[in-house]
Amino acid sequence: MNREHISQIAHAGHPIKSPLDDDSVSRLLEAGLPRGDERVLDLGCGTAEWLLRALATRPHLHAEGVDVSEVALMHARQATSELGVDERLVLHQREAADFTSAEPFDLVISVGATHAFGGLLPTLAAAREHLAPGGRVLLGESFWDRTPSPAAVEMFGDLADLATTVDLVVADGWTPVHGHVSTRAELDAYEWACWGSLAAWALDHPADPAAAQVLETANAQRSQWLHGYRDSFGFVCLVLRRASD
Image (cartoon, rainbow, N blue to C red; front, side):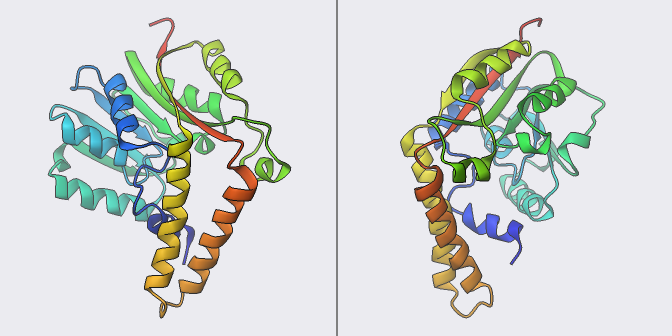
């Protein structure tokens, strides 16, 4: 079983692929979409869960999503059809860094996808290219909440702490107008949901040729979390505006 299908199973019970509960997602969307009729772009949209939630509650919204995953976009299109928002959502299968559009967007979302651009500041530079005057960016980024273990650094790389992460954003010409740091409950709930969903699938499908692989992945990932990065990993979402706008 490939990584895309494993990810699909892992996130079956937590479709927002970040450590955020439903209330946090709603508040972030409210801060990013103050009018409710914006044009929205999600760079690295996955199954387009952010966009689908926004479209479901804002009937005048139009959105576009970009992702490389055929599997994720297939599920996004199915959900789009079920919600009846086909005419308001366009999905593009391509590298987020290569996406271009003739029209700007009022909100650009990139949550947990800075790796697609090579880091935090390149992600903000890409978002700026798509942003309409006065627009907003909803950015989600990892940080070290405490000094990480060598194993954690090997998994996630050389992340900054929270203060440094925000300082880098501000120094790049952005002003945070809303923010949310994932709580311990959100971080734990996300990890338990992902690796629990994988383990449950393997136990429910013992005859599947991939069952042993999936269960091994679930056990290994849960162990890496508990022993490697649970005490040091953090996640922050920021709603940003350009200081010059």
